[in-house]
Amino acid sequence: MRVRTFLILFLSFLVLTPLLFSAKITITIQDYFHPGEGTARFIENVLIPEFQKRYPEVEVKHVYIPFAELLPTILQQSLTGTLPEIIMADNPWVPQLIEAGVFKDITDLVMNDLGEEFWLDFFEGHRLVTSKDGRIYALQLHTNNLALFYRRSLLEKAGVTKVPETWNELLEACKKIKEKLGIYGFALCATASEEGTWQFEPFLWTNGGSLFELDQPEAIEALSFLVKLVEEGYMPRDVVNVSGQGDLTIWFINGEVAMMVNGNWEFGWHLTPDVLKELGDVEVAPLPVPKKGMKALVPFGGECYGISATIDSEKLKYAWEFLKLFYVEKVGEFYEKWTGHIPTRASYAEKIAQLRPELRSFIEQAKYAIPRPLVGGIDKYPDVSHEVIMAIQRALTGVQTPEEAFKEAAANIRKLFSKEEFEKYKKMAREILDNTRKRMMEGK
Image (cartoon, rainbow, N blue to C red; front, side, top):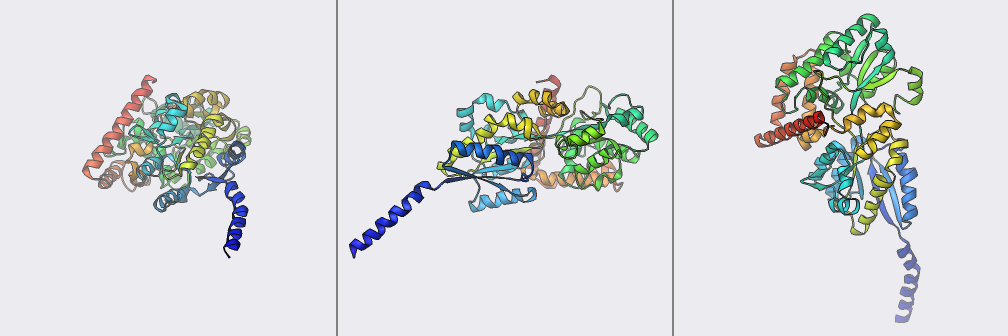
């Protein structure tokens, strides 16, 4: 009986042993890039095949989760201990996810393997949003920001001889466009979401305002400027009803507006090479500023990848090697061929600007672009943003004056924080904004 049992166990061992030794290690990458989007295709068609050639013992899975579902999914996974090995997050989420313990501290991996030079190559804003207390938790892959798109032929027909550089010049240009062409001169997105807030932020910050100081003259002046554009018939009041920033581009393509605020992602989305060729007059310039000599302070968008804080020790090496393949070996190919987004690293910025001159204004601004959560209350930034855009909508639709709208919003924002928290985040925002403005004006 014992001999028979032994033989059964021995044979089972012989059958199962090859399976045990041939079982692959699985690394999962989770993000919100739609399978048809350039980044997703790059991961699927370039990175994963190359990685699995080098590490045949590893299977890499790429999981797509829609944008609206990804942040709650990550937080739920963190609670249940089911985080994937490599996590992507929209950059405004990163400080919150660092606080929640989602990301692994990768400082030693970065510094020992790639060196301080690699880390300092990222523009300052992208270092700030992916680190805390001098420790690194994620790396921002690419970025985007906002600039002024304009139809050169429409400006010329209206007698506008130079692209507006100041708010007053924008008003003058819009007046000519309205009188001579009968169309709107300008549009920005004021939909009731973060898209609306972030399109307003350059006007607020460049004028010296802050999300924590909406009841101050600098903020009220910025909102008053937008209200004037609507009241004078230079900007459609319907900017409050658009579904998103892409709607502006449809107006722009159709010749209903001559200038718009929008982001570099539009190249390759609505402004495809065929569309650009057909129009033949689309150009980009920095956003107009309150006074000559100023430079626009803009927010940045873009996504970051990091490693799960709960990753198995045997998988850590592979997850890090995958990120190195992406961020070091293949990142040049990615920027040049696969995305309409722009580099987060200085060493690639000028090269991409030369290859794609339509992105130059965005690339120049990326050096000094502002991380929204760090000037908006970290994890409470979405709540702050909501108060801001609701106030903007009330002012643009005439429900309240700019002063009334922003004083109400300022009071509501104060209620989101304890007194100590409010003062801390107000100070943080002011320091980041002022320091960035100083560096920008000094060219540092």
